[in-house]
Length: 123
Image: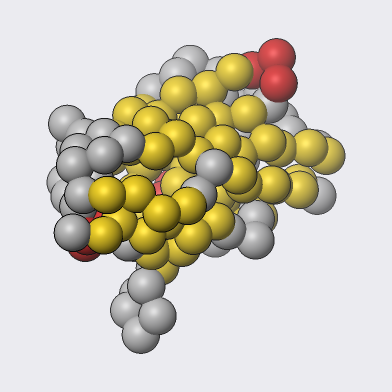
């Protein structure tokens, strides 16, 4: 099993920045894919970004391309999400997910999940 712990959420003004962290522990395979998802009450969970822990391949939702950057620190089994030029529409609870299969994580939303961290962007 994999345990995930997110941190770094909070309240930010529109146009500002925030950085989220997700520390993974347990059985984290070298090839595990980790990703960030977000959910607003009453809406479907949305994939934000993912990263392959072995080769660093990344992917982003169109809504965050050019504004968000996902990165990793393999030594710490930790991923980060640097969020710049934040908009009120980015307000959501952000969750970290993990799955040895990138397809199952990113396309099907299946895997291990953290408790999430709230990001609120005010205009």
